[in-house]
Amino acid sequence: MAEEVGAGQAQITNGEGISQQELDSNALHDELVMKQQEAIDKEISTSIPLVRGKESVRVLTDEYKQDAVYQKKVDEISASYKFIRRTRPDGNCFFRAFCYASLERLVGKDDEFKAFREKLVASKDILAAAGFTQFTVDDFYDNFLEVVDKVGKGMTDQELFDQLNEQSMADYLVVYLRILTSAELRKGREFYVNFIDGEQSLDDFCQLEVEPMYKESDHIHIIALTSALKIGVRIVYMDRGLGGNHDFPDSLTPSIHLLYRPGHYDIIYPNAETETI
Image (cartoon, rainbow, N blue to C red):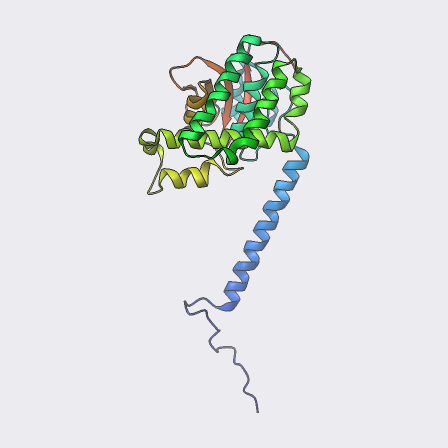
């Protein structure tokens, strides 16, 4: 007669004291979490454009109706800034905001176009010095240069807006900026290593936190990219702290202004700027 398995009989384990039932339960939980995240990512990609049109900064008031702290922050920011251009919250928001703001300020401005183009062409030297092969970066660089040259040939604000809302092209530009940021970090490793927490090496940080798409950006990313392209960026902080702003790098007058809310960057426009799309 076969023995009955009693309720108190020990469960099969994996040798580390974890039962098969627990393993199956954990695997199911992980699968559900992954599916939930995929659903969230899909919803974001289908419902939120890569970059939006300009809106009044006051639209932020509606987002924080029940929050007196943030309502006050909106009042403070609106004293200096008139418009906001929101970006998709997908981890690429800093690079996407920087890219869009860099290019839109070139529209109809020959001198600024020429200066930016020279910086972009020179950026390939940074990549070469960091050991990136031409084969690795050419596609991303060529696409970036193509868009820049379109701007120089008379691309309108609307055409630029449409171009940078095309996922494939927009992502090529973001990838190039990520690679350039990584190259700048590697080139100046003795300086930048001081910004990395823990035991992680700078090379590992670049491979895990800078080069992959959808990885969020911190001060170290901003310092490196603005230094590589010699473009000043002012970050205006909107959080529960003291707020204020900071210019990257300190030596340059900011030509791009970004609003930082915890985990996210949008473009903002000083009151003196005129409205475009």
